[in-house]
Length: 202
Figure 1 (tube, rainbow, N blue to C red):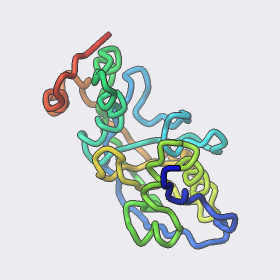
Figure 2: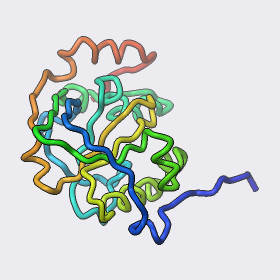
Figure 3: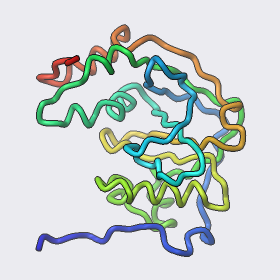
């Protein structure tokens, strides 16, 4: 049998353990999203990393830079053997800026010390069986400390992303500024040009 590492899941006493959190006074991040939906519209999607099917609130995923947003949005398609991005998605997604008007409390899983204290490793956070990272997402989302979200490393670029929980009046704390559709953004076009054999298919 092939060797396997232990899969780390939240322990039964996780709700009683201290959850390290830091206050972020301001937020200025990016979101790539369908043009048919507003930028600030938290929801659950079973294919998203922390969107547990029993999550009590919707989730809003953000990135700290455009490149990471694009990889998070299209990375699975790009890494498939066919290496294709669907034109229907590319031409109908836009980049928006999301900013906060109030401080937010965040569990920062990009910090090794935070991961050590709660007993999780990057293997669990990036596990291909989504029930593993989703279990961690649910454990943090339902922890008594009631943090506003999780900062975590992108599984594609390693750069920071943020997922926010739709509670405590989250949407009233955020403002969004709609940007251009992706085909109109030079940096987005450059992103496609750096990936070989990437035809846009309809």
